[in-house]
Length: 215
Image (cartoon, rainbow, N blue to C red; front, side, top):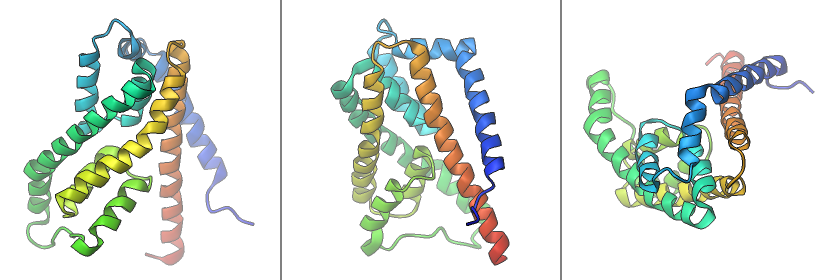
């Protein structure tokens, strides 16, 4: 049976990603940031502020979820996540409305219209779109709002699905509470590598499908 992906290419990409992750986590400034993030002496409000701001601008939320579990434990970490995700949703809404949508409209210059999800499909679309892996957390928040779903679905499914997906990461981080920094760094690195590998595999499969179908 022939595989749909080039195994050698995937293994090479994984090796490159692992090497890059090792360099990043051993790089002094990055290592110092991790130490700062989980250090007991770091003021909790400063960490929460970073958690509330950075994922809006593309910083991987997975990293924060693991760190919040390692720093605060399961229960308090989950509460902090439930407070920060609505902040991300509100901020993404305003940025998309004030900057992203006008930019798209200027770019397409009236030749096309941004697709809008019919209201009778909005609830199912919102749930499936947020639950299926592929796009980043940040991109999903922006795209869901731009898809035209009612705000009640945007906030409800944005919080519900992201929180459900985030709890396992917080629990995993809690396992590493009071453990050496290197273990936490390796775990976060493996998560990032797995996400990147999943994205690259999908890109390769999509390219092969286009080649076979001619589309």
